[in-house]
View 1 (tube, one colour):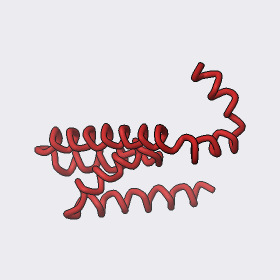
View 2: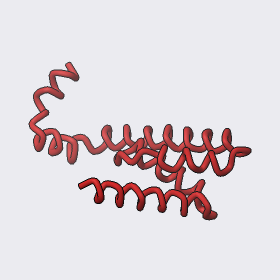
View 3: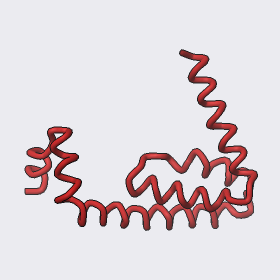
View 4: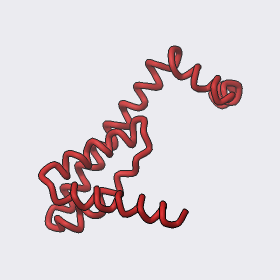
Amino acid sequence: MKKLWNKMMKSIYDWCMGLVSGPYALTALIVISFVESSFFPIPPDLLLIPLILARRTEAFKIALYTTLASVVGGWFGYGIGWFLYDSVGVKVLDFYHYRTQFEQFCD
């Protein structure tokens, strides 16, 4: 099990380092930040930290873009909940048997 974990961590590390050294690192970070705050929990820190370490002079710009992408992604996620609650949200709540608890929370 430990070998599998080490292999998985090594592949994530290699992916991050390859991406950081490429021309699309900032774009990938912005996309990951947006997606993470909208609907899919991929932490942008996996790419943010190595990118800032590689481009220290651009640290504040990178952090600003990451923050803005996260905020816009949060708005998008809110919109998903607002507009798709009846068609998707109720089914998800029913699947996890949380509809009653959610309705009590809303009251």
